[in-house]
Amino acid sequence: MELTIVNKTENEISIKVAGETHTLLNALKTVLLNNKHVEIATYDIKHPTISDPVLFVRTDGADPIEVIKKASNELVKECDEFIKLFKKKTKE
Image (cartoon, rainbow, N blue to C red):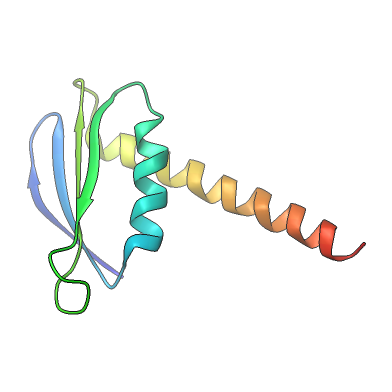
């Protein structure tokens, strides 16, 4: 995965996420949309086999980089919880 900031303002950011697909970006978008400071969180993939997705986030004034960091950490916690529960259930 490679990240490139395409554009950044005080409350918006566009990031090209090379090497990723809907799997990561849809999950991240969902977590971002649960943040009260996020007005818009979306991504676009022009063509799934020849273009890299671009994540776009607009906030109500909060730093979009900090918002994405927080969402990423929340997503990791959700994945860790799933792994823990899955391991517990599959040992029964």
